[in-house]
Length: 484
Image (cartoon, rainbow, N blue to C red; front, side, top):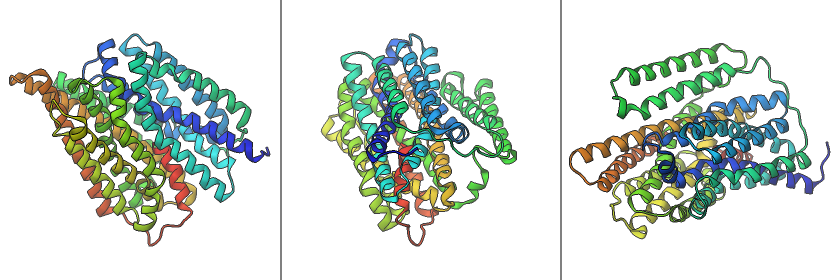
């Protein structure tokens, strides 16, 4: 199907709008968490499932979504993913119980995984000229990285002015618009059929393994860390993970080809991604709770507090970060960015119960925005540097999956740690707000350790190539869009 230039660019904006919905839903929920907790009766630790249900299914089905697109056509899967995401958003918005909200968030994650997996493939089909493709990927990457700041601000406005239900209901008209415009503007393109069978078993086992592990960690404080339930669930998760690795080693068309991990930069980038994701979700999740439950900020004030850091992160991700990689390679920008993020979390770990925005919040947000914006591109470029160009998308997808899973597991650990520390301080006679803040301090410190460990691993173990080909830069922007 031939397309004029105007229609092609309009189609790109439709794909960007679809991906923006997905990115928004990672951050838009953070500001509304205290309101959701109060309304539906979540405990401090079980509240993590509102975020984790989305992250786990998103990460678990990201690679499968790409393969489905190859088999059944990318536009068809994009439409299916947007439709599922929109219907799940409606269910989230109407949810009146914990179970319904968490279940609908899991369905949102599946829809989001499919959309993210096939949107880049559709864009590659739309733009075949190198210059046009680089420009298109730059726009896509900017929308994806900037979406975080829009999500936090929009979440604050909707929760404050209306209520938390609207952070999900706002997706419904946007989703309908994306479906209509996709049918009109985005051409149908059937991908090459992937050899072998779909690795459904791989997607199901790895997602189930991680959900069992997260459930065990989230409930560890209440049940006891050496209880039959906690140890049994962790053991079952480990067993399922072993089954997953066995499946991947044997199936003809694996979800996550294990051969990739023989490549040094791929392996290191995945470990760095897991650690860094834990640190990043300490920022989004724990600091939003600190601002609302300790400092008494309204949801709108929380959104505005996050805005400086998110704007810096979005701007750096698109502009300066790629230039730093071209000049200094992977290691220096990645390590510097992660150490800046660690410093931001350490500052949060000393924020008092009567903290002020200018002294205690703003510097941390700036450091975290600088660090995250600087580190995204080098991480994705490093993951793709050792693989053949035809496998670059797969390598970035594997790192994206690790990032989502690391975020979910890291968040479960940090939420449990914060709750345990708070309980200890209350038992020792501390006041409730001070104990809550003490729990958050512990989570911020461990998050900072995650970021510092990721920086050390990246600096010591990543190999920078002698030169970074210029054409890799647009690939990085595309990978970044998926990572965010």
